[in-house]
Length: 407
Image (tube, rainbow, N blue to C red; front, side):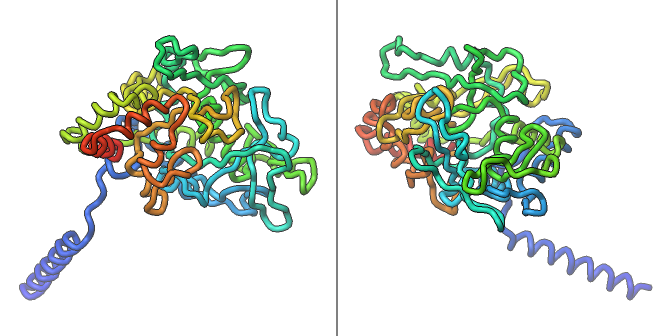
């Protein structure tokens, strides 16, 4: 018996030593400020359960032809375009075509607005029809979107300055757009002529995360739902949608993904108390960047207490701005002009390369390979801020870049 005890204690000692050695050899886990995924703090047990279901549907579910993929599609899963909930790569870039002004898309009967450039066997991938203008759009990071969804319309309109009344050369405007029948406007929404103030997408033409999710399932993966029950059309294969045998994704799954997107935590700034980063923030304001990339916004009421009446720091005003001829793709959505783009949130910017193969691909189409290159591409209303950046002393420019990399 004594021998058995000694052997057991010896094995325990060896096991403990092995565990300790593994801990020393294993790389440390990344901190919350180094990753984009994860739930917002304060969710209840039942809310966390829905979050996990949405996470599984968004990141783990890969569609096949047997599961309803296509017949025309761009990707086979949500996560393939938003790896780690971050920005997409040029290989996952989407193409939209067919609209040049606020009168609407003129190519809906020819497959617009989304190009499905892939198809399952037996079908023909879609091509851009002759005469259609188009734009390449890099998938955005999806964290913190629930906070953006809850910014009251009045707060966004307060930041707008359509006539440039203050004479600073910046005249942000909202994107007014029609919303689908399956969308219920939230309390406090403002409409004009049947159009609602929208805020998601590169042009800010999408109303909320339910519309974004349902449309992405349908146009990106070719997955039907009770909300959009028809497959996309490819005129090269005929003029009618390919029938689906009932919804290919359940309402429960859609709602779980929507909740997942609503409750993903916002990106956390790294080293905010670093004196150089604090100096960089002052430079950010002095150069005029903060006039569009507003640091601080606030949510309105939400039945999800973790999202309700919260201050957050996305670095956006959610408005459209004319970015000049260099960024004019002669394509638009909603009420936006072709050279207008919604101010993209800058939070998470410094982590962009993590989901983009180790290199940054910035701006709406990924054409900028660095933060500085992205700044230099700013034109139109951002020309003055761009020129102020160019004229900065080197140490001020370095501090500004350190701030942006910390977001």
